[in-house]
Image (cartoon, rainbow, N blue to C red):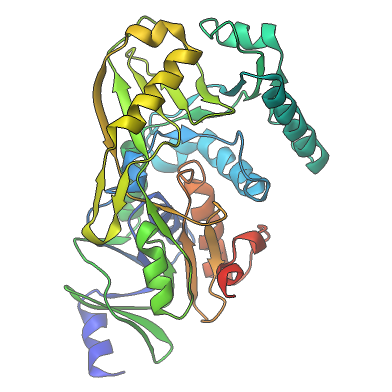
Length: 380
């Protein structure tokens, strides 16, 4: 053992697995690896849940996913249904229909084609709604809405509460979290991965890159290019309104996702973006875009036309060119794994991705269909 390796071992900076990134995917992978008997260290340059995992809308959504994501999303949903048993925290998880509203016949036809595709693939969690069925679930929806597509057993949860619950349970099982600890130079030494940080060098046989919007830079430094774009999804919260909605609602032809919380406030997002600056760790709200988001919500639900916006926020998130994440082993290095680039829809997948990756890291194999998510797809 080298002097540096000896020092790392005796300072508590060595483990079976190093995770870079303390978002929901990093924390979930750390917890599931610990459940499999591995020792784990998580390195987070800011604080746990600081970026995408803490500022998203909290949608626990299978509805509308890329077909390649559906099997993982289904696996993750089963974990969500038992989240309190796993984490000793309910994470604010509630089952609520996720509904995508069609405003034109062309949109309704596109939703029907998707439902048929999923049925052909063996999935029946997305169902078509005609005009009457839509209004039974959404009595306040605008008159022009024609129908929709729904996943009736989806839901939502509280992002910060969930990410912190994963962290707490992982820490209770011995996972060591180092916040304010940015990963610097990374090298292989004696069969281990060594990561230099301001708190010293950390080492482990296995390394997971779960660095979010900074995951591409990390992968690039290891010779695996991944064209990550930093984006800044934006959210709005309104004043409290009389109860009018029990579902999480999206639009088919324009960006929108919103839900009414138990206290009456309405949380609105759905894809319009601010300005992200990953190099400076900042995001900026663009108010003209927020105005369009608010207008779409009012168009679909006239009851919201008198609502007031009481706060808004954004955060830095990673987006891939094909809008699906990088999940799985490195294409170049043994013992290196990736989970980043969830393109503003990774929250629901966090429990499942962590479980799948922990199994892959611990055993060297998985039955999960990870080929579409390989980092090798960007090698050219």
